[in-house]
Every structure is written in C-alpha cells, then in structure tokens.
Length: 189
Ligand SMILES: Cc1cc2nc3c(=O)[nH]c(=O)nc-3n(C[C@H](O)[C@H](O)[C@H](O)COP(=O)(O)O)c2cc1C
Image (cartoon, rainbow, N blue to C red; front, side, top):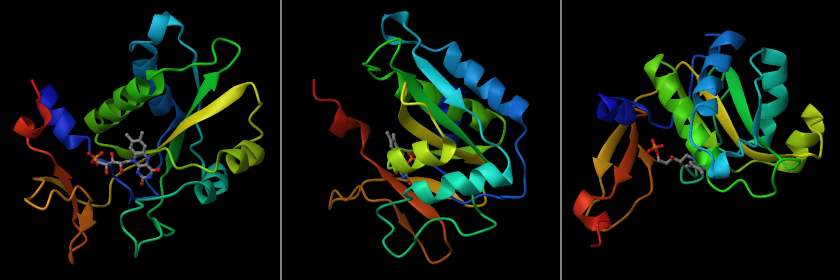
C-alpha cells in the first residue's frame, strides 16, 4: 500500500483551481510533518498556510515551474494551485535545517495523495520577493513552497531509456512523463 501511495504521489503542476482546500485540511497535512523525523529532534520548521485566492495570487509570481518544459511557462489562470504550504526554518531554533524540510515535504505530499489531492515541491522560489509580499520576518528562512490542489493532469512514470535522459516531458495529449532510473542502476554495492 505504501508503494501504491508513493507511485500516486507524483509532482502535479496543473489543478482545478476552483476546488478549494480548507485550512483544516492543510493543518492535518502539517500535522503529518510535525510527527515526522527531525535532525536532533530540534523541530525547527514552521509553516504558512495560504488557501484563499487573494493570498494565492500574491504567491504565484515568485515560483518557477517545470524548468525542463521550455515551452510552458507554468499553470495558467484556472489551473493554478488552490493552496500552498510554505515551509520555513526558524533560525532562532537552529541555523541548519539538514534535510528536515525534505522529509516534511514528503510526509505532506503523501498525505495529500491519500486525500486525492496533488502537489509539487517548489524549490526555485524568488525568496526575497516572497518574503516581501507576505511580510515574512527575517527570523524565518524560506525553505520550500508546496503547491497543492486537485490535479487536473495525468502524470506517469516510465523507465529511463538507453540515452540516459532523465528530463520529464509532456506528450501531445498533455500527459506528463517522468523517467525514473532502473533499480539496478542505483544500487552500487
Ligand atoms: C527539492 C525539490 C525541489 C523542486 N523544485 C521544483 C521547482 O522549483 N519547480 C518545479 O516545477 N518542480 C520542482 N520539483 C519537482 C521535481 O521536478 C519532481 O520531483 C521531478 O520532476 C520528479 O517528478 P515526481 O516528483 O513526479 O517523481 C522539485 C522537487 C524537489 C524534490
């Protein structure tokens, strides 16, 4: 079952924007992150949970989408995320967040997948711009933005071919393909 959920938890970048996600759902997802592992158990992560159209519109311009899809500049109006979870690092707790935010992101996105939602980790963020527009205090480092919504696209996994190309791509029907390296290629000993 975990394998099924991990396969279902793909990166989605197009959504039914009008399918709202309630704040309580976001809180449930963050609670999964709260229960996850943390380096030295410091638990330095904090979260902002925007889920209304006005806030969402402020955030969107500061995100970069699907760098490999050169002809696509990101989701258009109507297919943008209906919520975000912004993962912050509280520098008053520690200056080094190790991989806490990666673990938190995966917990949240697995929880979202279980609820029939989809999302994408966005690391390519204009952090200064986002800080300014949301008035995020300097105490918090902006680590990752998770875009969330009800998926409006199909994403499939395939095996990396003989050329070794790992770039995701979209076919004529708009299906998003994600090449994964074969198991034997990643086990080195
Ligand atoms: C740390 C991290 C940062 C990422 N940043 C971005 C990003 O800025 N923009 C984006 O569109 N996707 C981003 N992604 C999503 C990856 O492109 C995606 O995980 C990859 O294409 C594999 O697809 P999959 O998640 O469906 O397996 C990021 C993923 C990770 C783990």
